[in-house]
Image (cartoon, rainbow, N blue to C red; front, side, top):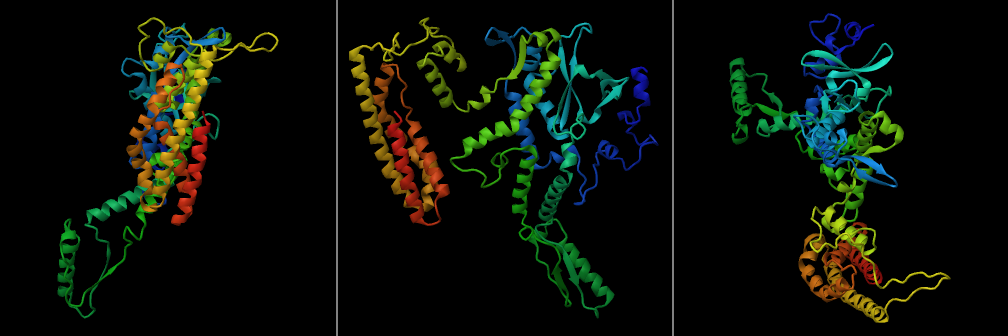
Length: 537
């Protein structure tokens, strides 16, 4: 059986989704989706994939995840002995890292793919192999998830898609298929279908609040008229009431009821409906569907001073890493040649460090540690910051600490220069004294701030660093000059302040409700922090 014949005979082909096809019932969910109507829900609002994007937390979650995944570099690596290096000459590398096709750069391409993957819980990418006899890719193109499906034709898997109102069939080996949770192991379970009732309720809440403000903040109700009132009088009262109460600018008018008429409110107002609480609960549900930490979607009270870093790590481990593994796994088996896979000479992987290194301070600390401990050269560190090599030509040399002895045969240790050893010992003592003075100063101000519970949070988040950063820099300047001269790591002035803020933030979160509870918690946290700061030399 030929492919075209199989497409014609396939009863569930996308071609059949037409109101002109008598074999398709008007209640078919796929037909409703194609017409932009969606499926009816208990909340009375039809939900489509496009409508789901109108929900702010859904938009934010998809925008966040798709952007974060797309911005992480995806590289083709070549194995070289025990090491690996990026292979920029590989045909797949320029597609997944630079330009997917003649219209899209790599970032825009992967972001669009992730939008499809998140909404439909699966995404398809056609691999254009210009030479049919070659397994080398020449371009990558997105296939729309709502117009694409998997079929078996003569026992072989194919991907059927609609392009320019025509059906096309591609071998499954030429399509990257990204899918999430699946019931049949073949197709991803549509997210909008899974969350349709929840999304419908959110859209209904948006519609309610919009209509409430459209009506000037006035709720609906019942107009009661006396039984004895003549019809003409009743009509006049009703007409006047509607004219005033139902107008667009009703919020600025006063309604006067005559002839014994009474108005009874028969609708819940937004306060009684707890719309604010509903919005927060909806954001939590969306965070659960996308496995995103709540604070990234604006959920109040889901994080604290001490847990932001842990939440960000959880965001990578529990959310982003799944999509990165999907992409890399599919790319390895369908973008690398059979020979490369067999020899295990190449692999494809995201450069995750580009995401996990959250700030310049962290990167600088890693580079400093690498240079000091001789596992990184200065030029390798400068490349991580997109800097050029050292102008003196010595950037490729690995540095060696002079105050470290060498283990000799028999267990003895060669001693470093005696004068340098004495200088290092004196420098260690100076470090302890300087950190002790800085710890005492900050501890006094922290205990003083704890006595004002109402302003403690503001002091911790803003005033602590604003008031004491310059003093810390001044106190550490002589010590850091000597540390740098001896090839040792200087102390960043902001580091003690940040570690203190973390310790005090945790104490504030765990303290009891009274002022005395906060003072006791801060006092204990300061003692522990001072001991760690001074003792961690």
